[in-house]
Image (cartoon, rainbow, N blue to C red; front, side):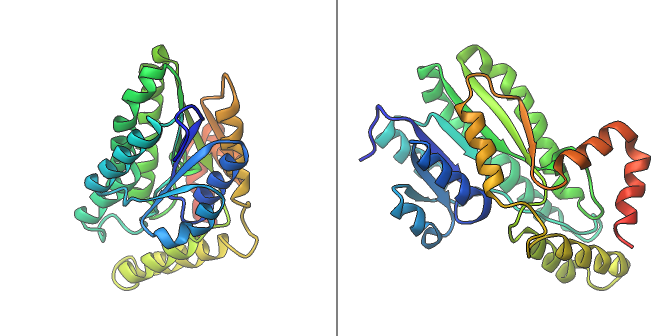
Length: 276
């Protein structure tokens, strides 16, 4: 059984990539860690390190409720919540059905929001805790054919900022982490979805270009190691006064800075130039 007196963390989307590395780092930092994902078998390595796996599809309320009930019964809540679960839906707005767009919001926004709601009462009782929301540099910028994905990441950024203000009186910190290009399967997933959805039709040409560019931008050593993000999360949760947001990983600070300082038209030209 987990010790109710020991610091406890929950990391979602822990079956691979950033989530898995964040969980490993928090275990090394001395936390007892719950890890959540849809595929339990992909968290067996974390269980061997002492983590406690939970089956959770972040889009299903009943699975969120069951996971939280277990955490409250065993550990009386968590001291650190890392909302990492998410995925990227890319494609022309005209080609993506509204039901699929809603699912993107369920996974990237509403699921993490529901999980946070359920874990907050225990944090308020302790008058302490840290919530880390993994957004993306895509929460501050935009890319071609990424309308729905960027909409969710922009939404999570704004949601996090408002949440930070309302939880400050209770001693609960809210931190945003904005990864750049990280060595995960993101590029292949996005490219495959693009080709499947819009490989023909009015947007076929631009879809093929974006799919090719996206696939070439991720993997094979082109991005930052996921441990970069794990280190940032460790720094944030270990700080008495963490920054409100951390941009980390390849291109994150640069791309956010270009958008901020040079404006939309210049950023438009930059994005379009990368798609030739």
